[in-house]
Length: 113
Image (cartoon, rainbow, N blue to C red):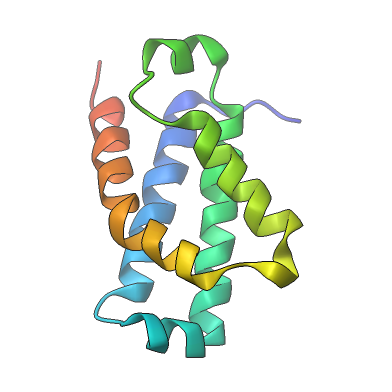
């Protein structure tokens, strides 16, 4: 596994969150569930978010416990390993209720000296 700079991992995360939010902007759950392209794009970006979180150095994670690093990584694993059984309601709720807070947390971390 190649090492990627922390700043790039945080940028990968915020970019993927922004993509997900843009892809789903103005949608309702039923529209999201019916739109295969959007679901696949969202799932891919959740994979990137989780992969980036898994590569963040442990020391940094311990300094920033407000970010749920383990849950982020576990969600990536849920998307990848339970591919045919993905509960789109869980994905949708994550988009609606968890991603805005995560974006705010990552933005703060990106802007720290």
